[in-house]
Amino acid sequence: MARILVVHGPNLNLLGTRERQIYGQMTLTEINLMLQTCAREAGQTLEIFQANHEGALVEYIQQHGARSDCLILNPAAYTHTSVALRDAILAVGIPVIEVHLSNVYRREGFRQQSYITDIAIGQVAGFGSQSYQLAFAAACHWLHQHTPPSPPSAKASMP
Ligand code: DQA
Image 1: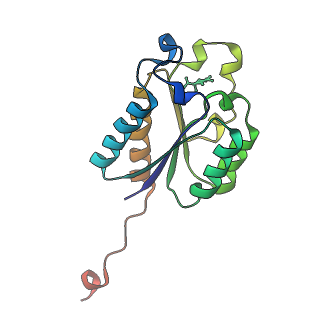
Image 2: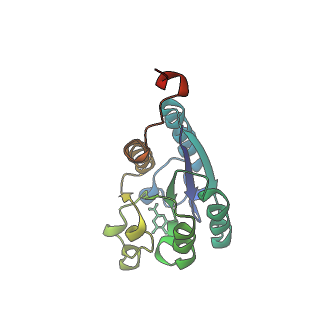
Image 3: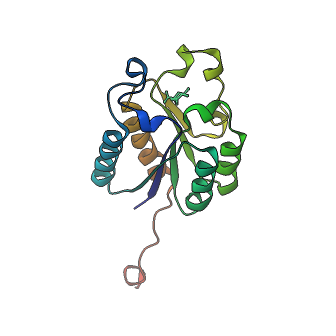
């Protein structure tokens, strides 16, 4: 069973009321419940965190990243500004999948720069709340491919 972190950046706590034409109707609580259901069905452990402060996100990644297998991250506005988040991810060495609800490449120019994309396994953007489900499926697939098979038990290997 893998441990997957889901980290949401600033203003994502306002989903459901925030610019619904861009980010959709679902609240963050509903998205998190949906992800927990996916995790239960896939037999994975999920830890979810949201913060509006850059330092809180950095500290969470520092504290939980090294003992986790994969990070699903929507850095929100910090995508476009945060060297600190990028460095925290590199420092703990956790594989990261970048998520955005909106298609950032169809929006303002400043949203097309990311400090995360080039250190990520991949990015999912533009599918609304479904971006998270797709990222979770991608994380499971990636972990399946990159987790070494467990060694045969002592009993099974006895002649
Ligand atoms: C976002 C896109 C960012 O540009 C923006 O600052 C957000 C949300 C998204 O999920 O589409 O807060 O990360």
